[in-house]
Image (cartoon, rainbow, N blue to C red):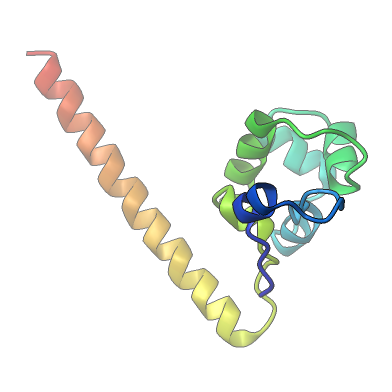
Length: 119
């Protein structure tokens, strides 16, 4: 996987080049989603997804977070190409399992906290 660190690129400058672009199209095709399906999951329009994929539009951080959530990845992972080989696919599956465990633990914690706060 190739990785471009957006923070250091912005801090150190990038010799007049455009900032690194998120790999939205690559992740969308990896997840087997159409532009419309991604737009529906992210709560935005198909035309906005298209403009973000071609970098023909200034990107909103809030929309990028919604796109990352819809793709079931972190915002940082948007700047990494999706897995391509067997080892990378195994790692992606491992990360998905970890994310699912974290989500379950977080949900249980929030439920316990809500019960405790209602007393």
